[in-house]
Each structure stands twice: as C-alpha cells, then as structure tokens.
Length: 456
Ligand code: PHE
Image 1 (cartoon, rainbow, N blue to C red):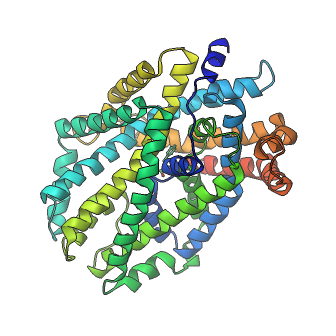
Image 2 (tube, protein in one colour):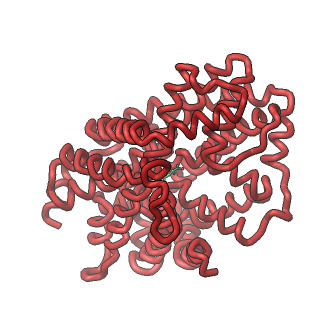
C-alpha cells in the first residue's frame, strides 16, 4: 500500500475532455468492430441481434463500465490496489485485478498476432502483393503468411515494440496524444469506405443482410453471444476501463462519457458493417466468418473496385488504428500493476511486459505453423487463450465487480463517485446503474459465462 501511495502523486492523467473520450473510445474500438460485430450481426439474424446487443449493452455494458471507471477514479490506482483500497480490510476483492492482469496477457497474446496480420497487410496492400480478384489467390497469400513462423513472429514482435514505444511516452503524451489524433482519422476513413461501398450496385443486398430482422435465427445461444460481445467490445471485466478511469480528471462526467463511448463504438461497428457487406455482396461473395472475411474476402473484393488498392490500404490502416487503441489499454493494465505494485520504474515495467508478451505471444504466432499440432484440452494455444479470457475471466471479472459495487462498496459511495462528489446532479442515473449492478448485470452475465463454458 505504501509504495502505491508514493506513486499517486505522479500518476499520469488524461488532460482534456476530448482526450478522455478519445482514449476510452480507443480502448473499446478494436478488431471486435471490424469483423466480429458485422459478422455476428449478420450470422445471427441482423436487426434482431442488433436489438439484443443493444439491450445487453444497456443492462450489462453501461453499468459495468460506469462501475469500473468510478472505482478506478475513486482509488486512483491500478486494478489490484484500487480494490484493496475500496474494499473492507481482509476481503480479497483485489483478486479481480490480479485475474485481469492474467486476462490481459492472454488476450494480448492472440490479439497481437491478429494485429500483426493487419500491420503486415497494410504494407502488402501498399506493395500490391495481395491484390487479386481471385479469392483462391488471396487465400493462398494469407495462408502463406500465417504458415511462415519467421514472418509471423517478426510482425508480432514489431507490433509489440510499436505498442511498447507508445506506452514509454506515458499516459498523457503517449496514449492520450495518439488517441486524439487517430480517432478522428478512424472515423474519416470509415466514412470514406462506407460511401464507396454504399455506392456499389448491390449495396442494398449487403444492407439487407445486416439490418433485416430474421427472428428465426434468434436462439438462446444468439442472445448469449450478443451479451458476450457487449462485454468484449466495451473492454470490460479485466481492469482496462478501471485503469483508464484512474486517469480521469475529477471533473470528468463518468455517466456521460460512458454513454458517449458506447454510442460512438456502436456507430463504428455499424459503419464497419456498412463498409464491408455491400461490397462483399456486390461481387457475389459469401459473408465468411472471422479472419477469412478480413484477410481473404476483403482483398478479393477491393481488387475489383476502382481505386481499390488505395481503399484496401485505407481499410487496413483503419483496422490498425482500431487495434492500436485496444492494445494500448490492454497492455497498460500489466504495466501499471508492475509499476505500482512492485515499485519498478514505468519504463522498465513497460519493457518487462513487452518482453513477456513476446514470449507468451509467440505460442500464438506459431499456432498456424510450428505448433499446428500442439493442443491442450483440444484447443490450440490461440483458441485456448481466447477461450480462457473471453469465456471465463472477463465475465467472472464483470460479475464480481458488479457484486462488489452493488453489495460491498454500496450506493452512497458509488453515487458520490458518479456525481463527482455531489457536484453533478444525477441521482436517477446512479439509482438505475446501481439497481442494474446489484440485481441484473451479475445474473445475466452469469448466464453468459455458463453458456460459454457449455454448462447451460
Ligand atoms: N474492445 C476491444 C475490441 O473490440 C478488445 C478489448 C478487450 C480491449 C478487453 C481491451 C480489453 O477489439
């Protein structure tokens, strides 16, 4: 505790209102928006799924995000120390922070590999080597890249060094300054791509795929998928938002920021869908899932559009920007924990984190080549880390945090934090968020988790 207090005075902060918004949105917006959201929406009945996702975001995402930000700002510490400070003595709520650190390492290990492909594709799009209107050719190019251990490792380590470099600049000059520049650029690129895609012949087919409700596809598993997505999308349950909350200024309006981030993140997801599907349908492709959609279908589609190469560069730059903000927030969690808990200088904590990630992450870089046959519990390392983090740690972290705020920290302190110690007049927001945290979010999230573990 003592060493943590020593750091409080010189902790970084987000310096402006726009900076807070850009950085927090930067964490939420990620690869999740570019392919996960559009694909899942399309595959699970379009508008119906959208509606459930929206509902899940409102009843789980919003309150849990407010809780994380409020706890973080109130304690002005890393996730472990924050929960130690706010919980009654001797109660082990700090374990949520410790689990979050493990989740950060696991998510980053596979996430950094997908980001590595994105960065590689920015350069390959510029060089023109992935330009072909034949999906077999683009598929072969993708398989050649992920099948090559040296390329996979080098791109991944390159991405990690890039992220580490930004974090070395600190919270204000690194994370915030970059987010303020990149977030507007992200929206600009997205709007351009959307305009081009919507002007194509069969744009309406793509829109129908995305937005026409097909209620027959809304199964219980689709509902649970929507709730899980809301969690991952808003970077909840592992301390990323809690850490960012600890950098918020005292006068930052937490409920307002939460609503804005959620709305802007939703906007990015919808625009991404509208940039991808009209183009995919116009050229007669099937809306494939996951990596195949982004790395195989997109190059084949864009190769057939006028100025397609430029647009493809724009698309992968967009994905790279989105992924960078998400990675920064993920990496910041172990960095700040190591820095404040073990009292090691921030620079060294950053380098230690990046080095550990290079080691653990390499098991994912090698998943599609050298370690192709290596499996634990029937899963390769890439899928295993994804499973443990997304299906176990994030939902468990979310449930425990909701229970902590709803039953331990209590309404008065939570309300105080949300109202900036009484300066904002928002009792209704507090009441609603508190009710959801106490009774609704934990129960619904438990359902997501049990489903994820196939126990339901
Ligand atoms: N929200 C990010 C995305 O959509 C992923 C993420 C999860 C980031 C957890 C931080 C913490 O890609």
